[in-house]
Image 1 (cartoon, rainbow, N blue to C red):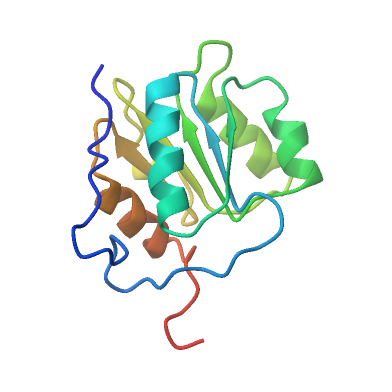
Image 2: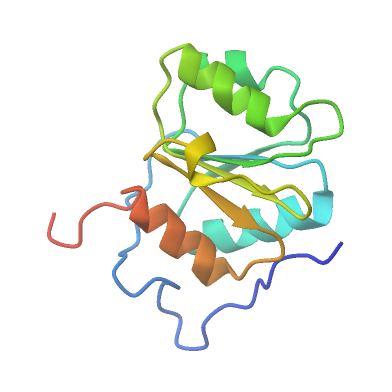
Amino acid sequence: MRTPNLESRADGLPFFEGARRPPRIEGPQILVVEDEEPIAAGLTECLEAEGFTVEWLSSGAGVESRILANPPLLLIMDVQLGDANGHAIYCALRAAGCWMPIILMSGSATLTTRELDESSAFLAKPFAVEDLLRTAASLNVFPSATS
């Protein structure tokens, strides 16, 4: 499986034109749940370069309790984890009343918009970081440029 396109912009600006760098917040802002280390490392590096604090979990074990105890600003999660089904975790979080934005991603699985709510999205791997940031912005993850 190929990793996402993780090249940064040469001008040093954020990948998504409408986004400004978010303020640093104590603790993780974005939780990445991905069982493939090269993909997780690339996502973490690019998101940190955009000003986010990132926590990475390499398996689905304990994700629900971790999120319910301290929800991140955004959850980015693989659908096909080695030990869990990311879509099942997504459904359990929604059933528990957790409505933070969630981006599900997969290199082989696909989800339809009927399987997701308006505060969620799906990205097919491989994807460019620009697509990830654009998707996050569409879920209102970034602070408003006017605030």
